[in-house]
Length: 274
Image (cartoon, rainbow, N blue to C red):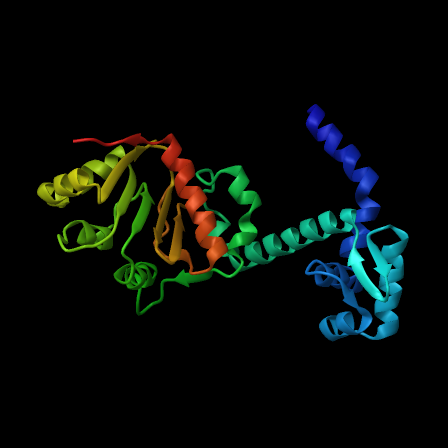
């Protein structure tokens, strides 16, 4: 057993009662969540939590005993420690909600191309939409992506799978106004160069409207981002890209999460030059 693992078991034994205190009580958890937005009186808490005054007061008394909340002039607020605990509790709730919602996307799929710091922030995907193929529209994930792309001027695309008709159209449209930035494995790049008009690529690279980078061959992901959306597809554990399911979101925190994902691979990529 590693030292880190031994330490983590030790830490758990020391804080397990605290974990239970914060997550086992709906009342205490909701008080922390409510007060994370700022100081409130009992009426304000009751209006948000929808529990009786006596129930809320009992929960607040328990939190006061642990110096998690403070009371002043009839208002309740989080202590400095309480602010940190509430932030971590909210982050855990968001992460669990996102994982439950996106379970079929992540389960039995490769996630190695998503850096650990982004997996820790998976709660950013809490409002994402899971798009599935249907018996009457087996390409529904790509059809939905196509609809989003049609209204987007700027596109970032990270991929180790070749199925890019929408991006291809953007590259071949001389009237396109915006930026396209592609990060592709060498295999996918070579395929792209076979099917896209070379003159369009040369013109785009020269004008600065188009950027192209090469990523590592073992990258296993497909990610697309436009002005106001992000979309994510993954490979299954057996190494095949899953055409049947994708994630798409228009939420600001998900788009920011996607930006960080793209930049992570951008920093590892090699710029393609003429």
